[in-house]
Amino acid sequence: MKRTALSALPIGEADVAAGVLDYLRLRGIWYFRVRGALGQRRGLPDIVAIVGGRFIGIEVKRPGGRLSPHQRRELLAIVAAGGLALVAEDVAQVITALERLSLADGGRG
Image (cartoon, rainbow, N blue to C red; front, side):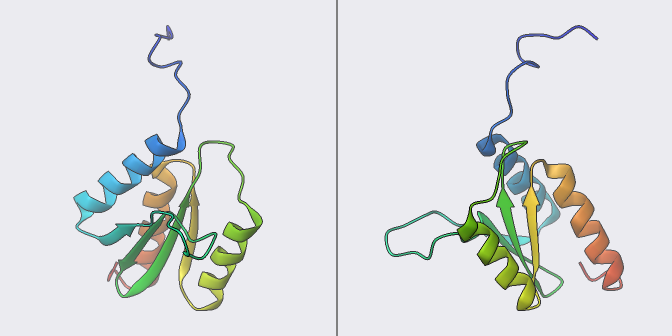
């Protein structure tokens, strides 16, 4: 397959986030985008959603991106509280995780 100029562009975090938000919107899933603000706790996930009554925190990273210690701490705290924490480098990872969640909870998600 011949590479075009567009296919050679690197995928950034904003591209991944846009794909995840589009997917959540198309599925009718309740969500909001966390925007960093003065006084806000560091490391909160980029996207928060609720699927089938389950809290989900989604940290978006460009492919190959790494979590900061604050992000890792927050994702672990979400899991410890009974939520689902995801690190998404592409929308397919979110789709797969939500499909597994739906299967695990009897199809409510």
